[in-house]
Length: 419
Image 1: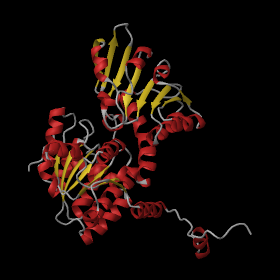
Image 2: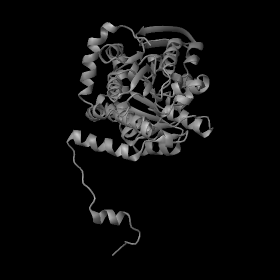
Image 3: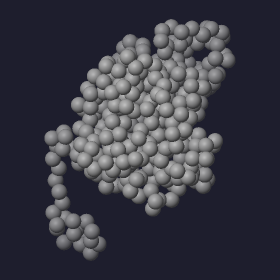
Image 4: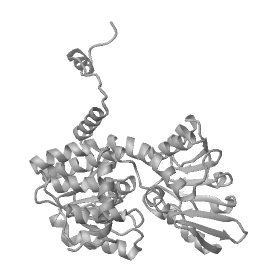
């Protein structure tokens, strides 16, 4: 199958960026060295639907080094780095179907191209490939041994499928690994989302009021970094425990419609639908900036904006202004898509190092254990999580203690109390 990318002549620039990212991904590099020796994925076809970035490129290199036949498409129309895609094709011989800015029809055409390769392992970021296979390509299910899922949004979809007995093969929820969501979601999303907003707007954050919808790991990281940049942070939540935690962490908590009156910048990180909707729009200040760092652009009710605007203007690339009937303007960034990947470069390599180490090791685990697994959504095996954390510590030059035999015995006993 012929790759579909923007321009193969961009490969040289892409290669330089891929190798730059690789310098800050030592855990994945150590896995790649072992994969080169052992070839644990030899002959396995992997169909990956992930953000086509330099960090993802190093994961693809690792899988291919392990013997896999790798096919990659983008998991978001705006997140592809065209030079990275070009280098993957030209320098590493990996089949890629991704073009930055592709329309919805082309996006699903590329998803279908990956499915057409009849993957034995699917590697998803949002569960679009899995959903597509289950909805319209059940003919290839018999050849699939398992899959992995990278995002919170995708895991929610897959667990819903599993609960309804609709999931037809086992999938490991990479997002649930501690070495993924504790770090990638918190530190990666926290930094890269602000990076996207700053690159697209060049607005000073200090002194602005930032509203954040969602106080999961992504929201926590984002709130902490926004506060560190001098923002006055407001949290909107539907979960009582998360809202209480945000309050105890020192942030104001209020409903969306109320927060809208104060928002200078609003970022959604919930994985849900229409988080910014009519009640919020009706109360927004003139010139409010809204954007999303959740997986799908459905977190913002963009159709409402289009239907209720008297004027729509593209101010600059990925910055749109909607003028409402009462004259107020609302600024939408990156078409409501992932602002960190659309407006910037996504998560830093150092944090994606652990996330993609999980992907690589879980693919290997699937090859070894899929025949023993039922059609369900599984957490990452604890031994994989622990091994990644330990290697990461080693690369950082950090040492930790180990339990003594006496301590091990104490922790596994029930008859030792106060003396």
